[in-house]
Amino acid sequence: MVTKINKIKNESASNNRKAAKRSMNRAFISIVQLRNLATFAVPKAGVVKLVDTLDLGSSAARLGGSSPSTRTKNKQPIHVSAFFKLLKYIKMATVNRENIGTLHDKITVKLGKEDYWPGFEKTLKQYAKTANVPGFRKGMVPTGMLRKMYGQSIFTDEVLRSAGSKLEEYLNNEKVAIFAQPMSLPNEAPLRLDMNKPEEVDFSFEIGLKPDFEITPLKNKTDLTRYKVQVSDKMLDDELERIKRRYGKVEDQETVSGKDDILYCTYEACDAEGNVAEGAQKIEETVLLEKVPAKLAEKLMGKKAEDTVVFRPADVAEGDELNAFLHEPLKEGPGAADNHYKLTITKVGLLIPAELGVELYMQVFPNDAITSEADFKERIRQELSKEYDRITRDRLHNEMYELLVHNTNIQLPVPFLKRWLREGGEKPKSEQEVEQEFGNFEHQLRWTLISDKLILDNKVEVSREEVDQDIKARVLSYFGMDADDEAPWMEGYMAKVAKDQKTLDETYRRLLFDRLFQFLETQFSITEKEVTEEEFFKLPDAHAAHHHHH
View 1 (cartoon, rainbow, N blue to C red):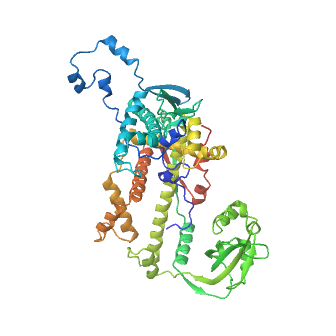
View 2: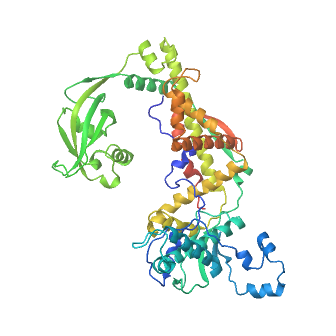
């Protein structure tokens, strides 16, 4: 109902914040990343399809028996001293971990030949069964030829895959909670992998550890204020006028003459004489004259269809009005304030507000049988009150969000996170870009850690049935229908929604965070305070009120 109200962003939609991009999911090092570490002793001769898993073969048998089949075959036990004598000739993988900073560790994976050679041989044999080489039937290519052609490539991939596998195995076994994924560290000396000289090889990685922390603002029952905006008679009258204009009609007229005129126009970038720049975008706009910057509106008075006005945004507006005008309709940033634009009028109309009466009442509230002006105004007052309750609730939730983020002591592995931000995306970022983005990135990351902990510790949950019911309710509301109304088409619609993962995920996250903030309302000491509309919009921004350096 409220048409022009500055909306306070609810953190239940915080997933829309660009700095955050959703939360950092755990993944493991890839062969592509590891390849960047290696300098190959033998040029790669071809491309192979790698097997998905490493088969270490019967390595247990070679150790003298740790599997049931080995114990069956070897009836005579191996003496302990003989076992250790044998063991020192077999170089198995070892993983070492050391701290290099706050929540920042280095992991070194040391591979022996035994870790990768069986997998290399198996992969080579599997490839021999499917390789297509001119002059040979499929599966009949000599192994020696395949080894010469593709051996080094297969060998390299198997060594790198083994390193990643051992790292993943270690992190799983040790239950290490990490940010993002391990990142490979460059070796001091170039790494050379040669299938003709298989030897021990080291790979180093760095990981950022997720912190343990307490959410102290909840323990202290921090005081917060829930504001209640009084709906004044003036607010009601202003909304009534907006409704009358919204449902009014437009009549054509010759020239621009007053604030109620509707201007149909286009904007194009040009030079000072009005010559349109080559390839300039033509932006169409339909706007009430009273919404146009006052100085530009003055230039338009008396103009008619096909007339033009050349102007610079900086000459017709300033401050917030200038920034808003550049953003919409010109779709530009502050740097375009001194550019020239040509406005061309395509049509002029006069807005005739709708008259109060049953016809208007039915248009605005089709499901209510309103017949009197008094009932119509009371219904508008109720809608205004509901809208302001939503806005003040959003502000309360945003204040909770900011307070939790800025007053919960969380240590982070900053050097690791900056490197991940710089190198972990599809395209590398510069140091300057990382520094510019890191503040928002860190802010959102802190909220992700806090909200995840709150949801897990307090069993905040949303079922699939609740997601479906919410989607149904919103669709019915869109068509002005109630839950009891017949909607035979709904089953088919929901079948389509079931395949729309984006809609399901967005609905789930919205409901989840709505429920989280409902829980949080019980964890703070909240008092209600009545304020006027003017007083409410003069309140300090929640971020500024709670911001301090972490």
